[in-house]
Image (cartoon, rainbow, N blue to C red; front, side, top):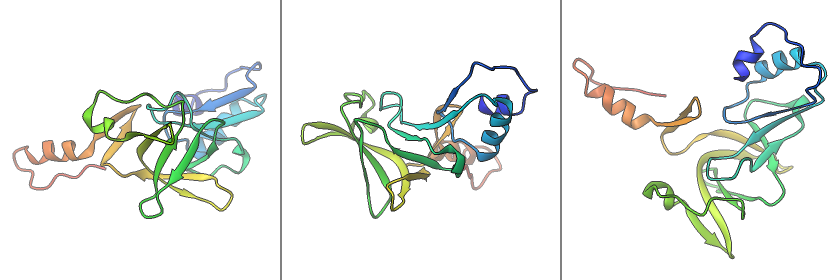
Length: 170
C-alpha cells in the first residue's frame, strides 16, 4: 500500500495528521515520497510487531532521521531482550498471544517471571541509546505481502523441477 500511495498522483488528504506504517519494511524513499504527498501530516510512526504480539511492540517515532531498518524502542508494556550472539529479538509482555497451535511456533513461547515471552525469528542490532534496527530473519523465512514464505521449501520445489540442479530463494 505504501508503495502504491508513494508512487501515485498527488492526492488531497488535508485532514491526515498521523501516519503509522507496519506490516512491511518501510523504505526511506517511499517515506520521502509519501511525506511530499501528505504535507499536513505531522507525525510518522514506523510500527514493528510480529503477528504473535498484539499490533505493535516497537515503534520508531524520530522519523526525520529514519534509516532503513529502524524499528525504534519498545512501546509501553513491552520489554525486549537481544541475544548477544545471534541478535535474536525476544519480546516480554502481557500483550503477547497466549501461544500457538502450530508446533513450530509454540516452542517460541514461554513464561519468564510470570510474563509471556516470545522468541521471534528476527535478528536486530541495538544502538547505545537502546534503539533497534531490523537486520533480517534467522529462520529461513521471508515476508511477502504480509505472509511468511519458507524459502527452504521454495528451494526444494525448484530443485524438484526437471533440469534444475540447485534452487536458490532469497
